[in-house]
Image (cartoon, rainbow, N blue to C red; front, top):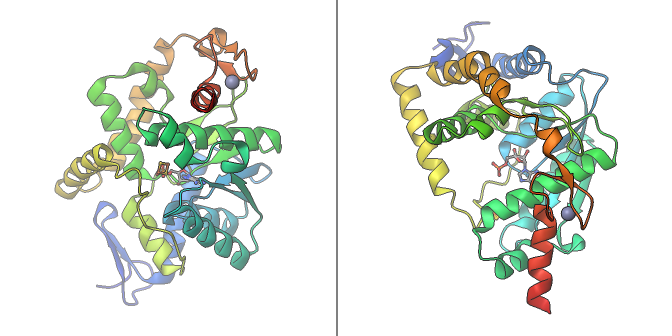
Amino acid sequence: MKCRICASQAVVALKSHHTAFCPDCYKKFFLRQTERGIESQKLFTRSDRILVALSGGKDSLSLMLALSLLGYRATGLHIDLGIPASSAAARGVTERFCARHGFELIVLETAARGLPIPLVKSRLRRPICSVCGKIKRHFFNETALGEGFDVLATGHNLDDETARLFSNVLRWDASYLADQGPLLEEKAGFARKVKPLWRLTEFETACYAFLTGIEHHYAPCPYSPGATFSTLKGIVRRVEAAMPGRKLDFYQKFLRNGRPRFVAAQPDKALLLKPCPRCGHPTSSGRECGICRIRMAIERNEA
Ligand code: AMP
Ligand code: FES
Ligand code: ZN
């Protein structure tokens, strides 16, 4: 198999694009697709300051490298969750990666803010994954707004996005469908959020990480096997294997034809927001925000 661009030995074949690339041409392809994802959805510009949430996994580290090579102003943010079997390794990988490339990195420890995940897990009866996700998003948002960044970027790829879309469609969850996409605009108390890798699959990101020599943290979280989501990912992957290109098409057509309708049918959520009586953060429930409720559950247990 030959590279479609330069005719040297190809190492990556992409059925959905009917093409194959050598290592150098593949890396350029990845950067072009990332840039296309950013420009077509107007995610940010080269004058914006971007805070990139770095978990230590291949997606977010690939995103950081790609943004820097494309000339964007990116700073990393790693949230150390304090989970004994995995957090130190994820943090170490992220710190080494940023040091190697000379990237600025902010590290925030949830334990230093009273929320180490093992403690939260032991005090709450709800499944830890959704609580942990809420805590991470809270600190992403707080850091982006507090440190004056224009936008917060995560490493979600096309497989993550189509599995989520499929899940939202299965439940016809109009509110989640209105909020799904590579861009969530800034609104009262919430930073602008973007997913620049939305055009790239998990396989394509893994190839980029491998070819650029990114060391990454791939051990699954000891608390969350992520079973439901991987079932949905598997289904979407089987559709893609039978019909190459359908995954990107499904997502792009949702952005073009589906999402605007769900957005138009939504009430203006900003009008419904009220400040949390404990911390002042905007919340739709009219009572304490999600993070304060987690803190209160911990305090109750300590009383
Ligand atoms: P996940 O929900 O684990 O698939 O992660 C999705 C995205 O969230 C990653 O690509 C990162 O951008 C971000 N992320 C997840 N965990 C962390 C973390 N501990 N610190 C910083 N960013 C994270
Ligand atoms: Fe949050 Fe596992 S990463 S519970
Ligand atoms: Zn609050």
